[in-house]
Image 1 (cartoon, rainbow, N blue to C red):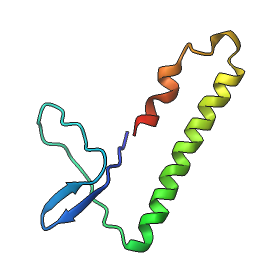
Image 2 (tube, rainbow, N blue to C red; image 1 turned 45 degrees about the vertical axis):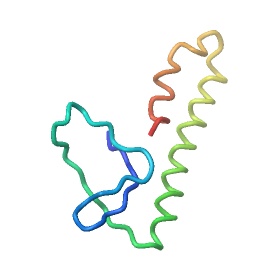
Image 3 (tube, rainbow, N blue to C red; image 1 turned 120 degrees about the horizontal axis):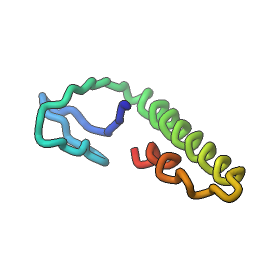
Image 4 (cartoon, one colour; image 1 turned 135 degrees about the vertical axis):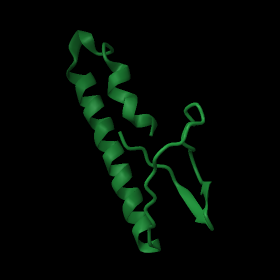
Length: 83
């Protein structure tokens, strides 16, 4: 699963703005860096927020229709909301 983290590129170094990727045993990780124009940043943020909202709504709908099994798979429902 792809994860997205905000950062500024200064020279050849990334400066993390919000959440930082969790280092997994300090081994190298492959990354793709997408350079956004100022006009694209708001668009990108809105798309990310919209995706998160859709996942939240789907989880709430499942809880609403779950009957007696409401909390059976809560961790699965919300695993992507920590991004």
